[in-house]
Image (tube, rainbow, N blue to C red):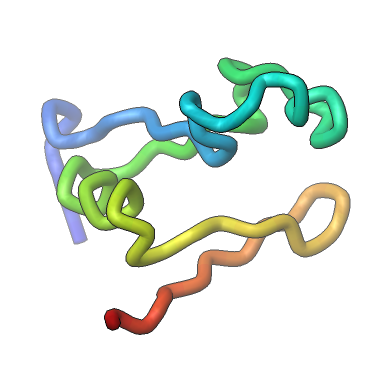
Length: 70
């Protein structure tokens, strides 16, 4: 799948509206590159609707989980 740079956005894995106090436990800052995922804008809309999530799977690995729709 190809997309132009205009279609790309940066999303936060640990969401901006979540409590900032928990970030220290996660070990990143809100705008830390480790907390940012670059995605196509349509994917961001699905991400914001909790249709898919990113979870840690080891110290340097993450897994994408597609959630079933209700």
